[in-house]
Length: 231
Ligand SMILES: [Mg+2]
Image 1: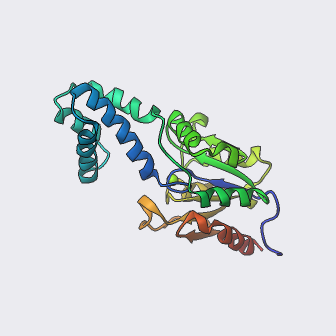
Image 2: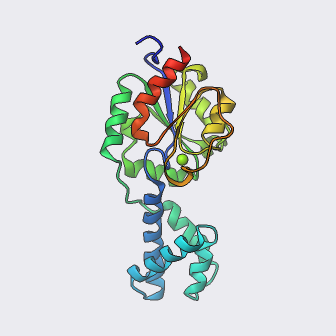
Image 3: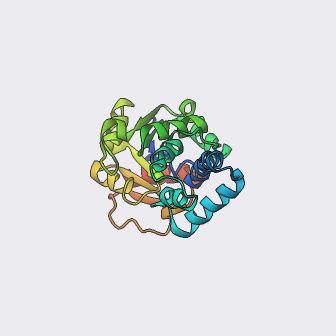
């Protein structure tokens, strides 16, 4: 077991596309938007949802609400309300039971934090829906600390609160900029999850201690690899 992380290694997990697929949240948000637009237009929710999803799949998320509001002949002032609806809706999400087991298992040996970027109210809804609060030691919202990723401030804060140090902590995340560059700046190890949106993007700028996994479910072995690299 020599070289393996000691008890109380702080493991810093990203949330979106690391612990669950963000696409699930996007679908849930679109469902909430479709309900709002259906009540405004009298169209069935399913048909609004299908139109919204088609536009999203074809043209992406930038300008999506502007396009859908225009398509239904609604005032552009409604876009702001839709953004609010999207961010504050109660999402329909469930945590993969294997991720739940992973966190429970890791927590027997390590301190675990979720460090998440994005509108804090929106991220809190996700954490609540996934039931994460009881599975980790700490949840940190980067925007509340005015430390948007790849600013390592929120990761450093979590490490300190949990009694760890950057030289023995590990960031596990999917984003080659937000998570990997934060690890580089913080001079800590990074386990990159090559899954979902950014899977094909190489981490060209990376910390000295770096390894990749195809799924967060492979974290346990990767944490041991990092321990071996640290010697
Ligand atoms: Mg992410």
